[in-house]
Length: 211
Image (cartoon, rainbow, N blue to C red; front, side):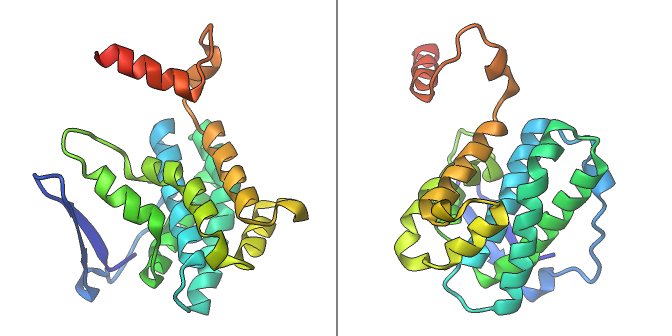
């Protein structure tokens, strides 16, 4: 759907390419092809679509038609990503997530933002296999808070789409809602472990395992 592509070099460097010659004459969006996608990739790619749409809308470029499409994609991703992750056979959820991904690809020609500026280099770190969409989900809440002084009123529109109360129609409210969604999409095994670690304890467990 877009004119862009990314090549990861052997060095780990990510190179972005863009050309009108990359835009397909015909794009077939078939949600049936996503039915077997496992939950963690459904969550990661779903949050990638969410991030494409919200970063486009918040971009400092002016493109009202792109903003309208981005808001529709944002609403679809917010409404259906958890359903698609929980039940991969939910056809309605899969359809709407496919549409959200398509809309995100259509509109990120307008421009993205600091989330992608962070996820592109860290996703190309040599020796790691860090999923792009998952990185976007991790970086998004902090970037949303950081952008508050420059975004202003746009957060009210986003908050409205997310169904947030008026008192949370700001950067912090939107960022907290995204963080809560990230938590809901997290690994289900966390819920059944005998002792549930905090984020800091997970870091300690990782460090202990690799020492």
